[in-house]
Length: 382
Image (cartoon, rainbow, N blue to C red):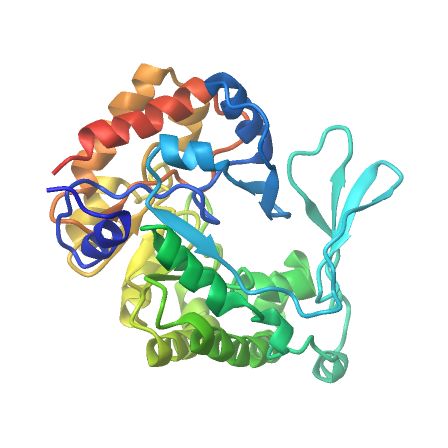
């Protein structure tokens, strides 16, 4: 019996088996880099169409609707907006293309060779605690952030049968702390100045709590999935000790999750790259329903072990194939074998949305992208 995409996603995230494994493609963490998007469209003969950037930092697109249909994507993303009068715009200085976010962080990319953007300026770098306390943040509840958002989601619900994923406004408490403070200083603070770590985290939460409240009031009753997250892991393990996470960040993330729960019955998927097995019990404890991107090539993150140890309590959104050894450097047949393995590991009993391990990168051959999704549709039938 066939199901609608929306029902398929809801069923899978309820740890039940739908008609087939849902396909995640086109949202923030399971989309494709703009260069890879161009190559994929050319490979499939899809001329024309818009090229809309979903994430300027990583240069991730909203995929062409023809690709979403071709690969039977089951979800569609929605976002709040920056407050007016902020307007996103690139500008060029010398050899760099740049942009500034509404908080004041500046990003840059080499014009000739750049693939992504990197940080150039952090507004709290070198600042004292008093200066950080006194800094005026953007207004998180400005009505322009949510203007027309409920109508947009209602239109998607009426005109499509896709599951709606409501995305977070920032990378999370940890990530936004170092977007503001700077990566080096944020990590040095963890070792040398715990009070400053807490101050920065509290100022981020001071902004996020009212933002999440208004966002969920606007659309929480309409969406099926809410995305939150923080990058906590590297390739070989946590980026900082789990003890520090539990002290500084876990209680604050739990506060944000409680807001979502108050206004929405949507499932919460939490994005964290890397080897984060040590954190998974903590994420389950604070109310996370699904883990993304399931970085199967990282230490202790093999799909079979994750399903065995955490599959009763946690769904998995991602984990479709090793992005380095297989997607970027393998053959289409290598991709098919890898997809079959990951589906067999993660799909039984539901609790799995098939997707790439983070966004499909620029160097992935388009033939491998096609093989990736076609294999998921073939092997993902229940």
